[in-house]
Length: 447
Length: 182
Image (cartoon, rainbow over all chains, first blue to last red; front, side):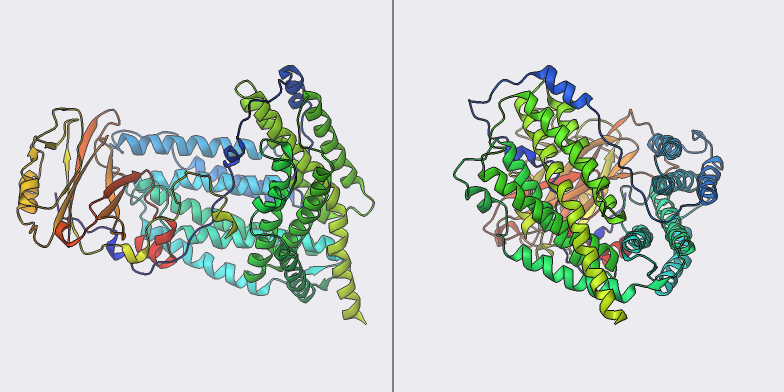
């Protein structure tokens, strides 16, 4: 036993508060009344069984099968270099052996999942995750048997950091069509930002502290960073290969992101800080109604869209800033339309299970309509991928808690489906709003 | 900020202690007892299964604490306690049960305006070469000697908490901190 030094030395330059997710806070809505109607559970189960639409993530760049094969081979190579289980003679600590076994299984599972993704872009993201997990297993094993240390891993990270900076400096926002280029470069920005973020984790405290699995986590971070950088390079290269008359949209995106971010921030400034005063502004008490969920979700996501637009602009990611402006304006318009609907007494009650079914079908219709709109673009498609996931969220309410609290499940599901209806409707128009601004500025530049 | 108001009502703050409230010049010592029995007991508490925690501000209060086991290092612990000057210092003793493959680490000690002290621990994994079973249970005792006396403060409230992650709470987290930590 020794008198130990603790973290006091580390707590020397402190600041920064973190944001808190809204997830899991819907309990705030559960102000039950005695007048909740009985809803037909069988009908609600059938609503869930209607299924959900496939709007998998895509990217304009044609991801190469050869690149995906190489990425998969890398994950397999990492995993094949270590045994599936640790020998107790080599690693006497049973908890370390258990963590390793879980990490190995997780990596195997992620590799399997990558084989069944719906699009090459989703496969690309999935393989990054598989490579990270395989590296976690390999790093944990090698550290446990004394072949790898935290210092070794920190040494690996240095060269990747300089590669990220070098790519970032040389990246040009090339494109033919501004809308397609916007989405393509947003994905490049995403992968590049992920590469830097993963690498930061090498120097942070992870789930495990000063142990073999901690070394595994660090190797996971390095490998995930490497895979992200390779992905960014590949997406940029493949997008460039598709261009017949490439132009550099860097200044266009930067200037447009700057002006549209200011605009959506101004729009946001016209509303109160929180949704509560807006809800109190109605004559009807909206607690325990689908209307509250619809209004709250659209309002909160307007706020988060503005935040994204600002943060990405500040981070030097103008394409993602413009996607944030799209989200902010999409949700602002959806909020206004929802507010008008609620003023018209829509969504203020839920008396029949068939109402949930009808709303889900309306949500599916709104997604299809938006997707098939003539002006539909990569930008709208990207927005619809986000919007469509809310169908799943609605379904999960019906799946999880229908038997325990039928009304609450139906109310939440209806609120989510309505959120899809209102936001999907706005997606093509807001894409046109963004593209119009881009093309106008492009016209100015050309003049 | 909008999201601060979106936190679930009644949920604990996600931010952690204020930097200005941190206490850094404390002394720390820990003991591992390879048994499920407590190392320290409250003389007034007959419940043998409990793992009491103590905030001690005087020799009188110390008199209520019984050593009920003799794990490795117990003499160091006695010395640590004996060297505490209650005119200028206070002593915190916290005990945890854990499996034989894990330990605890002291994350931070804070002294906010409305409390005497808050201490927070996290669960750590022991080295890979430590022979241990996750079915075996141990008791760990953490002794913290604070650099201020109970008589110095009007607030007597205190707490000890813990979690599975040793990641510092957001209020204490910076890149500099994390780099040093690693």
